[in-house]
Length: 438
Image 1 (spheres, rainbow, N blue to C red):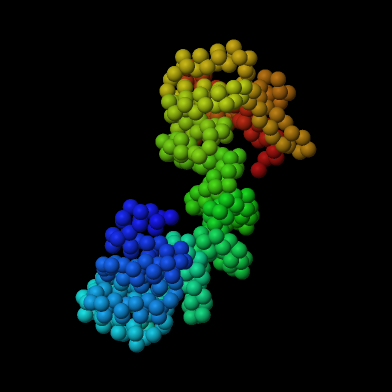
Image 2: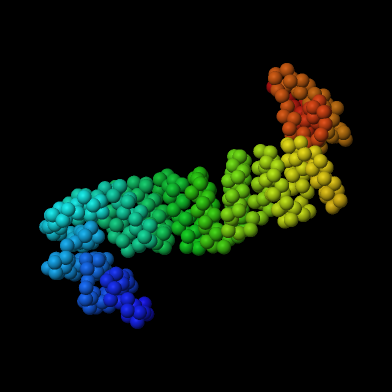
């Protein structure tokens, strides 16, 4: 159809269109049609000749490629760098050292040997033995092209030449098969590798391979297996897992992993990067994602961004008191006590109550519980005395309490008192009272 359109519009006589048609037919496996277009050219130049020579070389018809090259020379055309690369590749397919020397000489005479691509092609056509680094580059190139056919040949060559396959090359071969869609071979290579030699990169290649082909659940199973094997995931692992969820449409799983990423970045203080990550999510962020951002804003005192996250959460989970409390805890960081009052009044109007803080400690066969500033616990007198004694000891040792944790507009001394009787401190003090000395 494209060829017919070119004829109908009169572009079929353009030399570049003719070369393009030859290349198109060759890449579609229609060599005879490509050769027919080539033979009917009226003013073919070196580009057209090279297109047909390349078509034969890529179809692994090296003899036909070289015969056409000789005919091109007889017609008075000089090769360019692209022709030289193609011819060198055809000679390489034949493994003919004599022809390689001939092409090398011709390239020198044509002053093309200084071209990097030509020089490289002449070297793979010579007797120079490739090493694992060479193989790594070639395998990576095949992966980039998603060319399983070429990749398989490179792999076969690596095996038959008894080349050392180090961990990096092994991972690259696995990655090549995965990107080319041959997950069976990729998995087979992985399973044949002793577990002691598998690192995060090996697991990443497998996770990424399954993910990019839409097999998200399988990718997640491999991720779970990776963690069970005790292999530490890295940033590439997380990107691969997120990508796998995205490709397979696993929205719930995707959101869960994004929430982990938001939590990790947020705790590290990268709040702006975290917000950008959320905005770029392929699916709608859920309450776990916004909740992780709100918590990070609380830790680092980002009031404005915290308000953005809180408003999203109030819309998604209007009855969840924890998010209202978390936001009311952010405002005191910037002394916005009026905002705290508004938010608490809003909660009161909606009938929402903050659950009382409660800590438990196990002693003997029983579990004991404490509320903050607990006045009803039967052990409160002993526990309070212990807390006060410890507070004095810590003060003498130079300890200064972090009063920013007290989210009430009260005097500094009152803040110290509130901190002393936090439910966790009461539970620890109880344990210290009950435990045997020493």
